[in-house]
Length: 348
Image (cartoon, rainbow, N blue to C red; front, side, top):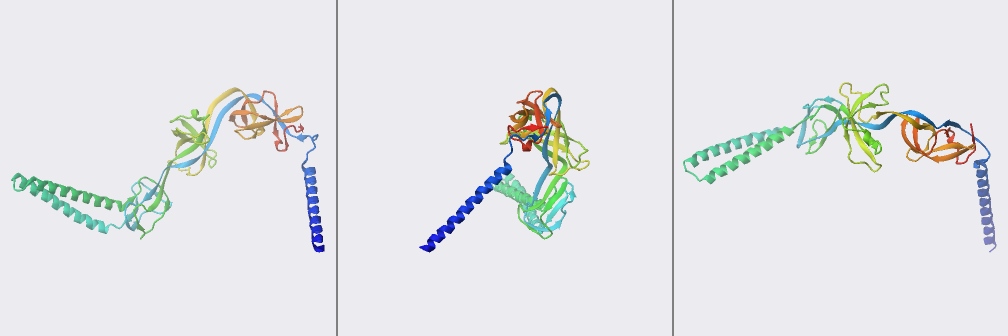
């Protein structure tokens, strides 16, 4: 019994010590993080002004190949000749692989002989039918046999053609998955062929901006990889259906044949100049807090930072157009917002 009492006393002392330490920690944290409400936070500000706004808009996307396919085997057999290497530029019709065709060639010889014999039977029965030496049904059977022999010959010829696998268009072999001696089955992947003589830039455009694009429209395309160059693009597809975020995929084709500077997978931007907008109410970009979908700014009122919800329109360079929530002449905070809460005292 005495031992139990001693154990309980020890446990109680440990618990009391832990509680005291926890309370001390909270007190220290409150002392460290509690801001004196009378302390002014240093900020930088700018006025809300009316300006002419150059309505240049930019959409970011990714370049995709003009064409890209996986080349598959259309026959069974062993590869007896390899016509490509990975990374090689190939022309349309260039050999990719040759599959062993010896057995097929023997089968074709037999099928040709069978077809010739069937044609001879047809001619013989035609003559006999004219002389009424045999019934017409014999001629019909001969015709059917000749057609069957012809079909069999064409099937074998098609199979023979499939043993020679060629590039369907010009491009670059971006992957290769076979070697000399590889035994192929129907549908075995052999290589991936990529055509970047033109590239497609795919961008996602919000519904509020989709009417700014039309099929056939010429646009300027840029990329950070070549910052001093612009590429001419043409809108070739505007999706009839948006995604879940109400963005519409738009496809821009960029001719790349003369230089092949652009590569699939690079980022690109489409720039559209929608001309000048006069008397636009604007704020600097760095005044914006929150998100573009839920924009907010801190406004200075009576020496305090007041958080306001706003609506923004177009943007240009370093400015956003404000369509709702602010008036000309109001003072917005453009630096130091990270230290602010609604109602914080501020000074410049």
